[in-house]
Every structure is written in C-alpha cells, then in structure tokens.
Length: 353
Length: 70
Image (tube, each protein chain N blue to C red):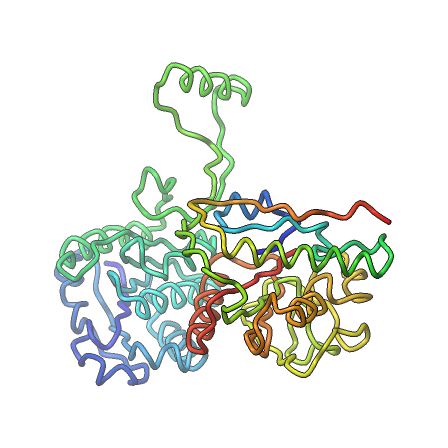
C-alpha cells in the first residue's frame, strides 16, 4: 500500500472561504476535506497519511515560509507520492499547487501530480518549469468535476508511486511540459519528413515532431483619435536603467519591473544611465541611452505639440527582456497594465530591442 | 512597439510594430552624425505615435522613413 500526502487549500480542506485565506500551513493526520474523496478512490491501493493545507493568500504572501513548512512535513511523512489539488479554475490555488510540486521535486526528488483547468495560470508556470517529475492533469473548470478529477489523480498517483515509466503527454493525458525525449524509431528523419509532407499534400492528418509554441492572441486596441491628446507612457525592455542599476536587475530572466521618474530629465546623458541586458551588445546604448529609451525624441515632439503638454507619463517602466519566460512576462505585463490603468494612461510605447 | 526584431514581434502577435534600426540600437543609428541620428530617432517615435492612431485588425508593421545619410 502506497503512502500519499494530499495538499489542499483552506477551502477544499473544509476550513472556510476568503475569511480563512490568511491561515498558515497546517497538517491533519490522515485524510481531511477533499482528501477523503481521494482516500475512497485509492481504496486498498494506498493510504492518505496526511493532509497539508494552507490559506490561498497566506501561501502567496509568505511563499518561502509556506514552502519550507510543507517541505519539512513531507520529509517527516515520507510519502511515495504527493497529490496537490485539483485546483480547477482557482488561480491562487493552481499556482500554489504547481509551485509546491516544483519545490518538493527539486528539494526532495519527490514525484508529484496535480490537476487543474488548462486555462489556470498555474499551467503556464508548469509548462515553463519543464520538470519531468511533476505531472499536471487537466480538469473541469469548476468543482463539479471533482469526482472525475480525483479518480484520475488517484490512478496517476499510484503509477508514480510504483515508479512506473510515464509515456508522452499526448498518450498519457497530462498536459505537455515541453520536454523532448530521445526515442528510437524505424525510419530516418528524411523518411519521416517526406511522409509528413505527402500526408499534408494529400490533406491527410499527420503529427509534427516539433510543435510550435502557441502564443496568446491579443485583440489590437482601438486606435487613438488624436495621439497628441492621449496620456502616453513608455516601457523599455532594452534594460536602460539609472547608472549603477539600483534595483539589481539581472542581465537575463528578470522577474520584476520598476519605473523610474524622468519628469525633470531632458535627455539621458551617458554615464548617468546604463543598459542592463545579456542579449545584445550594450556598448551603443551605454554611449547613448536614447537608442533604447528615446527621451530626447519624446521631449522634442513634446516641444512641437506632437505629444500634448503634461501628457507624457512622468516615469518610464523597465524590465530587461532577455530570456524572459513567457509565464513571468505575462504576469509582469498584467502588473504594468494595472499600474498604467490606475494612473489613466491611454497609450503606451514599448521600446524593445 | 518599436523593435528591430519585428518578425518576432509579428510572430507573437504584437498589434502595432514599428521597425527599429538594429537590435543594439533600435532607436537610431550610431554611424550617423549626431544631428541626423537624433532626427532619425524622432522619425521612429513619430511613426509610433502615428501607428497609435491607425486602425489595425492584426499584427501590422509600420516603417519609419529612414534617413539615408547627409
């Protein structure tokens, strides 16, 4: 009989809703809340030895402490496998499930399975982690899909606990993680490519061996009636920051943004600003920061009335974009958009490299 | 957005894309004399402002009138 630890949020542990979302990590012996359903489905195959739960807000506001507490409890319980969720369409919970699975796999080598709706923000992080020890099963949008989700999680957990080899996502039903494996096949690449091409010409189905990344499609915003009347802000992903890089941006894989006030600045003088970015030669931008953050042009257009007086936002936003992970950049974009909206900005110039 | 990697911007579905000069210096050209370089930069930013007034249904690339030297 396998040992399972089930990880839940405060709601699915049966503690309460938003009023309990600030509760710290807690542990119940055996199965509690939704874990009882998991135990029923595991039946004689396994035992839920403990249920770990936490408040949705607490986890995200005290992530280090929460992950440390959960890791310590898993070390104590020594389960064969960890099940987190299902989180359905709950964003905080879904992200927490993915981050916990990732941490337990990295720190303890634990194999983990979680479940949520494919649109849950946790899925982007899961994909981005490319972790071959963590599996995410698609579920329905709401808890009406609980029984089906728990049944799938129970069976998958048993297979992980037995150390079974898990095949590719398309065959096993978990969401793909962007991991490519070497496999031996009968036909050479040339033969397979020709077969695919012939199938395509024939209008027959074929499966690519190199799926392309699927990007979000964003509807273009409506045009401005008059750009001189719009509140305008600038975002820079080229990495132009005040000299000395006061917020410690890295040259790659940044995870936060900052904004720097330039309301009193007419032009960006070399030696007072610098470019932090590992994806291109920053020498030109260090000599003339306007190549990445064209303040001199903005001021000149302002002087000629092409940008309305007082319409240029007093600060510019920056995150060096090099090697940014799509999931992180999506969050950063949402945060910057919220900040822009709060301050009534109507149009944005994004200067990339 | 202003980007020298405008094919990438198109591929990921950015709406209004203005062609930058080159990846290490999208807004300008260090081989030009300073005054022309500044003029070019202004042209690029002006093109971006015009792009904001354009109705677009999908990824659209706007090309600034790049100065060809003195």
